[in-house]
Length: 230
Image (cartoon, rainbow, N blue to C red; front, side, top):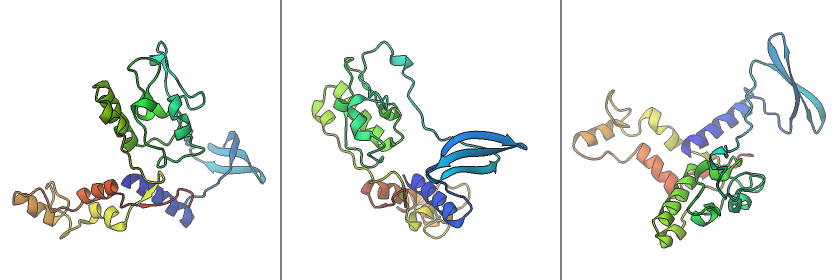
């Protein structure tokens, strides 16, 4: 999540600085090649519009699951998302971000096929809002159910950020590049800073800063959350 947040912040800074031009509400009609470059023609609420010329078009159109492997099994899939049907209303990208999906486990991930579950990104089908944290909890719940520990399987505990794009405090994002305590660690030493290297050399686990703090911040919910639309 910290890296994902930094990526969102970097893109926003590029747009705000004018280095990247953001065009919203654009429906592509045609792509034409002119003098070796591409021109994208489309429509907006204000009428026709042409973008470019550009050197390359990258289409981030999402994905859909390959269901060929399970064709002979009795599945219960959402007709639109092609993920687990019980999850459909909970993960609808028109209604939810990746952070406000309710906790769910083996019961929502099951199918009419006995002892068959869909977990991970495939459980979301075409929805683009899957988070690894969600997948970890899905697998834990399903594994407990398969082992017969229904109390553990039903005790689904999942805390997610309110939105999929998180911003990282400067103290966290700059730690790895600048060194947090005493400056950067010496070359060829597995440490995040000078103090961390000294602590490990004396037999300790480390100085307690760097990536360990960043992970703790994510787990404790200390990260500042920013709306992707801002």
